[in-house]
Length: 300
Image (cartoon, rainbow, N blue to C red; front, side):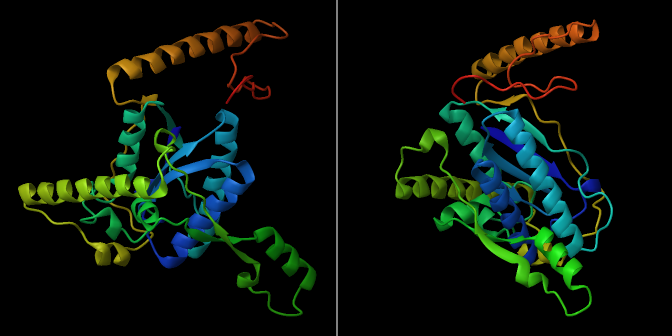
């Protein structure tokens, strides 16, 4: 399992929720899911960044999926908001999520807390954009819109000026399949929904208590929808992701040590490559310089 983050350039509100923005984000994710067979557990897109809990077979699958998602969201929403410049502030960032139940649940809770911890809404249910809380609590897979730009381009090229080509004629409704957390995959749909409901209720209670202690109040759904997509906030927060998200130091150390071993093997192979060795052995699951991805042999 991987936790992925993407952030708009200069923290601008280019992902500001609207019915069309929501449809386009879900459509791109659904198309990417079909193309690369990625499991999606929880997406949450705020006005200037997005987080997702995903399951990848390896780093190559992750790279292809995220390249497709980043590029197509930028293209579609950039067109919508008439934004012609760079869309994302930097390439996506990601961290492994430890495989134990506590770690997986911890990261699901973090995604569910989006928009509440930022002081935007009182409940994650209130966020008007694509959010894991509203998706999971609905008990249904969401649907989005995928725009077939290749077909649209070819139609316009062939037809020239002999008639108007409508974008809507090249739109397809796609369903995004949401999976249950691996650690809770054994639960029935009703049991899973109950656990999600409990987590959301706890988030709502903690959010209300925090605002009470601080004497503050959430910005509110209406105010969020009134924000301008090109707006650049003065104080944008961004933090570097850790190598692994783990609920305990003991679990974290296991992953960190494994990463150190992997990194040492990669550096040793790189040194041999620079020294002229024709076939240095790079560790599985990496991208050697100027060479194909080294696939993992065995179960994913």
